[in-house]
Length: 295
Image (cartoon, rainbow, N blue to C red; front, top):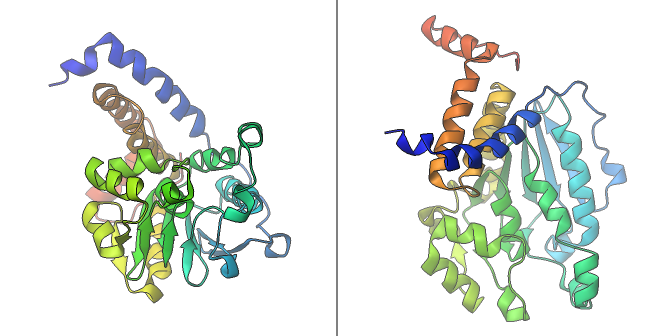
């Protein structure tokens, strides 16, 4: 059963991700000061208990993703990631859209050298490095970069009027922030090809749920609250164990199955060295609520 896990190649492939994982799981020491909305031009932020709610706020531009927005988003997410009082993050958009793609006014005048040396997409990569779970609450359009941003999150909840699409090819370019990679893993090759090659085939919220892109569809006025409720459940669990689980699932996108199984198995055994594992199993056996200490 575990013969694949014993192969030298599998062990070598899993070693680096595992080392990376353990470097991440050290406890966060001190909470930083909350993000101040007065200093933000493109975002709104608030906290609800141990959950941070971050709202993309360029309503007149359907929350189009400009460089300034991404600078602020990375700043905010990193602050919450290093805040010991926050256990999970919800990301949503204001009014009619989650995000209707990259800001074309900003993108259209970029030439190859400018785009290569001043990498607009570099900010997107940092979002994937956030250790705490991020739930996307998609309310309205999630097109182009907006769809890619939603797919960078760990869970996607959609309002019943949400629309997902990758129209970049109609603009003379292709998805560049994971749209050709994450989409095919979520909806399969044929549907991903149809969406990306035509640029005109979009998924409704219900279609996205059936395809596996979306976890849950809700009435538009309930999607944020439901995302916050799920985030609260996650935030009240053992944070090192949550981070291990998130990392193990994410590794399935990056390494072969045999190496991924080995990685998962080693993380599973590692949880037995934690106080929270003993507390969680003890509380279950004693029929009481667990008191996790993140150790």
